[in-house]
Image (cartoon, rainbow, N blue to C red):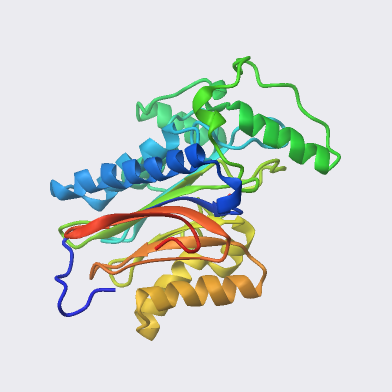
Length: 333
Ligand code: ASP
């Protein structure tokens, strides 16, 4: 939180790469380094946009591209598999300056789902598109399309096999076009417990906040399951009258509590500080219904907050005049 002595930052960015069972004893030094480096790279990518006077939306899109391209994270390439052995991607974005929002669920061919969510917001009359129609819209907007096997990683496939065995469900055939050999980058990935998600919130030098989230959902999801990440108000919310929030965790709980909107509502209507609102929703409300996960948030006054009730959350923050801070475990700063 800023004090009178500190000037209000002109811009700020906070990123997350998912929350879950992430404990110091389970991560090899090289794994920990890979995650910390990735979080720093993502925050700096967004910060570079903001430093040049770019918009919060541009910073979020650029930063989430890096996460969607990185097989360490459950978004874009490296996404988890459904029980049918597919990667079905969800994403959303919201502009706090005008409450415009865009979201997509269950896309299978669009390389960067966050850009598709943004296209829905900016170039369609709708807020949310799903499945094939959403991919068709992406193609019509000339957003890069890929073969579904592009999203395949060996370690996520192994997680699917383990999950289906646990549930006594049949293991589907490997997807067509899946590479035969495990890939190096994904080998460093840590299994944070069947899920993960990436998200970014930002404040730009015009004073606008925005939020974006992108995910593959949860391992072994069935029946067209959609989590909180593409649901405006649950996994993502932004309003210049309160704050911008991106969430990660078991989506069903975040939907029931409309977590992202609830944090902003506490700031707007109860006058709570950003950190107090984040803790109220995550540590109290979410924990009370046995939900697990966390959120990142930024306010138009430059306040930054994060809160999670899991053992870890990959995260980083940086703001105008404030140093980069990267964290994984509960006791990191
Ligand atoms: N929130 C995501 C979902 O439920 C998963 C996660 O963030 O770990 O789809």
